[in-house]
Figure 1 (tube, one colour):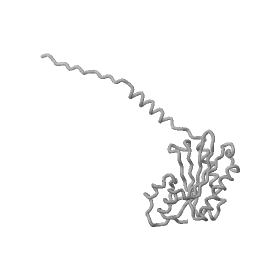
Figure 2: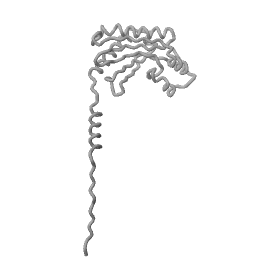
Figure 3: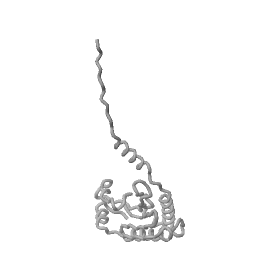
Length: 185
């Protein structure tokens, strides 16, 4: 499916695209490929259906628990989430048509400093040719990101730097006057 910039922006702005959100607990999927696979299959099926109907899609899997994370598949012409659709015009020209790709997004305060990661998962041609391979690729990507989320450690440098800065700025500065002496002749 090809789309021009104006149509893409209009569809995203008016939310004229297929949307789905599934919520699951960590315990329901654990680190098991077999437990994650049905969710990945559903997400990929929705993307394939969207391409068949010349539609955009945003399908999400929200994992709840101690370190919540949301995974999403979105079709777009660039690796920007729909939330930032107004920035797409900075990279593309009006009047031309562009191929849609499928992007895999991860949102969590435990994924990195920006709390967001987006990667191209596949192309329209690849997903229509072999959707089961894309499902396997998605399962692997979800497992990898779950591992990142579980092992993520927030930077302590920020809090240390803040504490040092606060200490140094609250110290009372004392100044001493310099005495000048004149030599006697």
